[in-house]
Picture 1 (cartoon, rainbow, N blue to C red):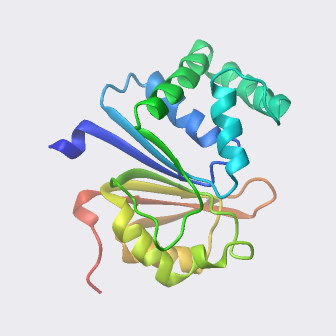
Picture 2: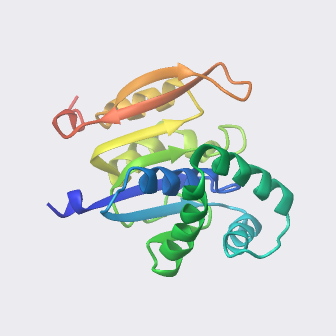
Picture 3: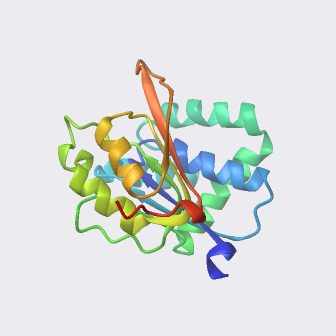
Length: 195
């Protein structure tokens, strides 16, 4: 069906764009031939503009940081990293990669996402994005029937919301000083629960 002809990702918290580069590198490495769509949210307009300018080869604020990050992609993906940079620019120019402002309750997700990278700061700095109510609605309206959620967080609120939306919640080892992270996987036959 149409859903199988495209692959969609939501990235919450563009930051320096490493998730977007990773998506582009992996899809190129795997020889993915379907339509690719990415929707990134970032509350800081400076980060959105800097990343787009850096992708285009212009010198920007944080240039040294972007170049250091990119060197790790080159190390791991070789020439594919440069192709990924070009792919992201192409996706942006064709409106297949949209960079939005801050994620809110009113945000419109224009396609069901197969991959949700939920790096929405923290419950302290962005409390609205970590409530049962918000997560339940967000996962309901944004996740494709076959999808995955990856996040640095591992909270009971997140676990409840993922399970309510039909995801199998998995606690994972943490990173960057965090004890745990988590991942959720939803296959078409496991859809949202009615309980």
